[in-house]
Structure formats: structure tokens, C-alpha cells
Image (cartoon, rainbow, N blue to C red; front, side, top):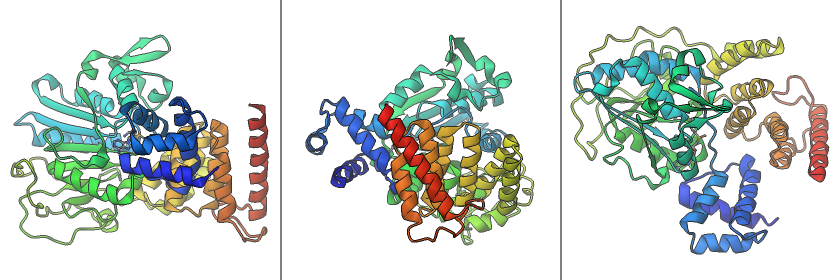
Length: 465
Ligand SMILES: C[S@@+](CC[C@H](N)C(=O)[O-])C[C@H]1O[C@@H](n2cnc3c(N)ncnc32)[C@H](O)[C@@H]1O
């Protein structure tokens, strides 16, 4: 295979949608190219297909390609800790501040098939007894037309409901055979719209003056420079004191000056737009100092006004939050999670390791252990997601590549060979008797042997199919 072909494809995806592909996704890229060429009627003529894409990509082919490459993994109430924080701190704060105007503006950016904005709609219905009396603008956007179509249908299977507390939320769904459909009263609360974040055309009237923006597990797929600009723009879309929620690994250590790193009582780290009424500007705390804070940060000045005038921030009407409990030590959490996993106590291990990556989202070891636990629990797509984060943080993590190959093999994902190649590359020249870093005591030689077994098994499976 000519690597120039995948490079051309990668450039196009970068140009159209700001996509970024680390080494671990190169195999995926090639498969998406092959599948889209076939579906577009080019068979195995990848060069001809790329010529077409580079000269006159029509909307149909463009959608076909994006549908192949965009990762749409999501489910209801994904990341339990965050939803606790939303229910107990963030939404009550917003509802309190907006109680007078009864105007609520929320945006789920990169909403995929709708589970995230619908989870928000369900939570709002539970928190606000007469939500009909409010002017609610619950916007959900995504680049994938196919994902949005499914979101509008609001029909879901088991996978999407795996974290759902059926007792609490059962009334929001109607069962139709082996699937469920959200009731109209929830569906109608969400307004779906196609949007490409890489066009950087926000704030606009639909996206400005937001009280809350969720953009989780989306930035991880985008080019670094674009990510910085998108976060700055999200800041411009927020009302003063509005909240920006990203996935733990996506929270920047040095956010733009208009946004402050903030930690909720349960440890969830997020960003908050500064209030406009501050007069002095203390240094913006970094993630580390934000974690160490025991009180809510003092307000800092606003950046220059954006397109629409922003109302002066009202004096906070809610009681200040009690000081958060001392931050859990991620190293302790990691060790406890490993011990729980070794004892086979997977639910405790999952809780501990989730807490660990929330407290320290840039710990590659944390994501690696999370992936192990998820794999044990057969949450294979989640495990792949966690491994991508681990390898994004530490591309040399040999054990991560090996684990990735194993999970890919279990999913029937042909990325196995690429991951194995990455594994071999990361231990090139390392003597066999050396211990594999993070390898729970196995040597590099033993790891090489495991890789060979995986390689042989995969080749045999391919020959059979
Ligand atoms: C893994 S899903 C995240 C879904 C949900 N936010 C969650 O955390 O469960 C990532 C979504 O980002 C969308 N996406 C990727 N690049 C995008 C872009 N440039 N503009 C808008 N959406 C994009 C994909 O289509 C996909 O649906």
C-alpha cells in the first residue's frame, strides 16, 4: 500500500473537518479510505477516488467519507461523575441565575446520535417541575448527517442504555421490540443542527449567550491548533459565569484568559467563563493550582465583548459552595484500582480508576488501567477510546499498543496489525530481559511473544474470512 494515498486522504479530512490522526489511527484511516472508495463505486482504485475527492467532492461523497471516519461512540449519562456534578452543582447554579428571566441556553457540540443532549433534557425535566414555563434553547450539533438522523429518530438499543438507571428514567422511554424510543416530550426539547466546528463560525445567534456548553470526546479527534481556537470561541459563546464541559483529557492545562479552570465538589474539572464585574486580575490558576484551591476562585475580568451584548453578571444569588473535600491523590487511586481489578472487583476498580483519570486526566497509566478494566467488563469500544487517550498522552507506551491490538482483535477491527507494528517500534532495541514499562512484571521478551501470538491468530482469522 502506498503511504502517500493515506497521507492525501488524511490531508483532505484535515482540510474539511479539522481531523487529526495519531499513528494509532493510521490503520483506521486506510480502512475508511478503502471502504469509502468501494461505496462510492471506485472499487480498489484509491488513486482515482482521491483525485475525485481533491477536485470536485460532491456532498454525497463527502458524507459517505465522513460517515466512515467519524467516531460516533456515545451513550446516555456517559461519565457518571460528570452527570452527578451537572445535577448537583452546575444546573442548580444556572437555574438559580436564570430564575428571573426563565431563559436557558444549552449547547451539546459534537452530540453524535443524541444521547448526550437527551440526557440533559431528561435531567432538566427532573430538576425543573414546570420546564414548559421556561424558554429553553437546547441545541445539539454534529458534523455527521447520519448521526443526526439517528438522533432525530431517538430509537436506541442496549449499548446506548448501558449506564442508564432504568428505575429513574424508564418513564422517558417507550419500548418497541428490542429497542426503546424516547417519548415525544423529551425529543421535542432538543433542536438538532448540522455544524462543522472546524468552520469556526460561532458565536452566532444560535450559539451565543450559552449558560452551558458540553463538547466531550470531540476535541480529541481535532488538530491541536484548531482545538485551541475552538475552546476560545466556546468561551465567547458563554454568558458570564457560564460553564464549559469537556472530557477529562480534553481540558487544557492553560485555558484562554476568559476561562477559568474549576473543580466541582466531586473532583470533575471543567472551565467556567469569568464574571464581568471583577476589577482586579489575579494570575489565572493552572490546573494544578485550581485543584489545590479550597475555595471558589475570585472573579476575573471579562475579555472584550463579543458579537451580542452580554448582560452584566448578576451578583451570585446562590450560597457559595462548601470547600471541596481534599483532592484525591491520583497515585493512590491508581494503586487501589489495580488492587481491586486484581481481586476481580471490577465495579470498584472502575469507580476508582474513573476517579483517578478525572483527578489526573493527563495520566497515561490511568487511562491504560481504565482500558484494562473496561476490557474485562466487555466494554470494548470504551476500552479502545481509553487506549487512544493513553497513547495520545504517551505514544511510546508499548504496553498500550499491545493492549490496543488485543482489543481491536476482539472487535474484529483490522487495526490490529498497525498496533502491533507500533508496539514493535516502541520496543525496538530493548533487550528481551528488560521489564516492560507498565507491564505488570512481564518482560519485553514475553511481550514480544504475546505480540507474535496475536499476529498469528489475526492472520489465521483473516485467512478464514
Ligand atoms: C465520540 S462522539 C462524542 C459524543 C458525545 N459528545 C459523547 O461524549 O458521548 C464525537 C462526535 O464528534 C463529531 N465531530 C468530529 N469532528 C467534528 C467537527 N469538525 N465538527 C462537528 N462535530 C464533529 C463526530 O461526528 C462525533 O459524532
